Length: 152
Image 1: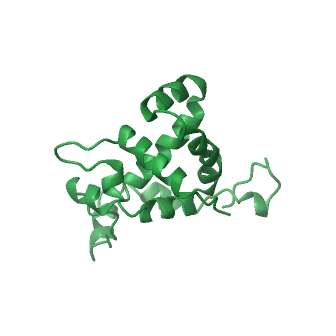
Image 2: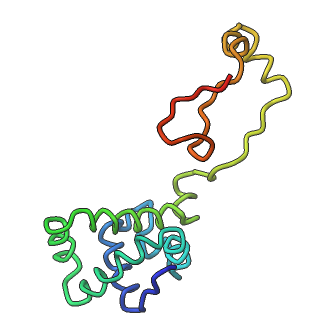
């Protein structure tokens, strides 16, 4: 279940995010990249563990200057700072504004060309693999954990 953040916690996240990912000539700040917090909501749904761990931190940060808060967090709880950075950066790189400025279209399907297999088979590189046949290790659900089994 996703932890619900208050408007105050969200505002603190925005201010901390702008320090961690400030605007530059070419790129927007963290809050400019997600002005309506839609991407933040998406990230919180994807990582409810971060939402729950960071909620008390954001409540605590309300009473402190954001720059000093981040400096203190860096020395007192670097793992929690890493969680905050993960959420800020993850949200930032979901932004279409940022992706556009990076000239990154996102993940796209790249179907093989009709004769692509012939190219890879032409020099015999895959021949030993094809002669050997299929090999895999069964998943733990299909065998005892720790068992070393090869299926041929």
